[in-house]
Length: 329
Image (cartoon, one colour):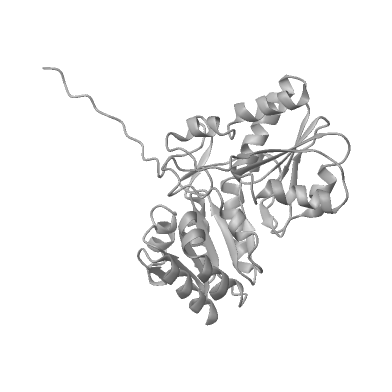
């Protein structure tokens, strides 16, 4: 009798978008928050029964007396975070992006943003970073939140961005929303002399033929695409936009100079995210240039394996390279 076959399983909820041979850092948000709390006693953490899946468990284990488990009650969690901020604490409240935006928007808007409280909402699984389908894919969170007054929105590229963003968000006096990359997060930006600055975009490489204006994990893909395109004699620049709101309009207008092909890259639907923000900034400035969006379609996405989905919906490095080559023909 043959031995039973051992089946390898991977949870689509915690699947990584990192390449197999890529350098990664485990739970950068949780470790950065725990380190910051070592120095600042006013830092507190909250979770809606998802500490393990938002890397908040690292903070919980390091500072158990400053962690609040709110259960599956996202609206109550944001209301409680507002109350903690009212008495001088600096809360980081974590859940999945779909629940923070679709389910608890009114509490984020009126309890936190309207009184301009220092509450940091941390949304895991932004865009297409899970294969669990529309119930967990926050493909429209930026579109929902960009219209909320007073709210600062950050979409980090990698572990470097996250580690540097955490103290900056705590220092910011008003409310913030962080699109969290969790688990084993790629480490990319340390090779580009990069420093996160709230509200500022960063030029990571220059090029004469095409400029990628990117945010979130798509900056990693834009950098990979630029390297590959170089072998085909296509000179690509990359402008990383980690802060979606307020938008670094000056850097964007400088990036669309000349006759370079402009490609916006985002892990979000093409409606209401970076692409439309860039297009509006360019149009308002009276600049006539075509902008090509590399973004998710305006539809509910399929469930499945992340590499397959990223290729299917145009977020993979291969898809980016193919899109640029087609546009340059």
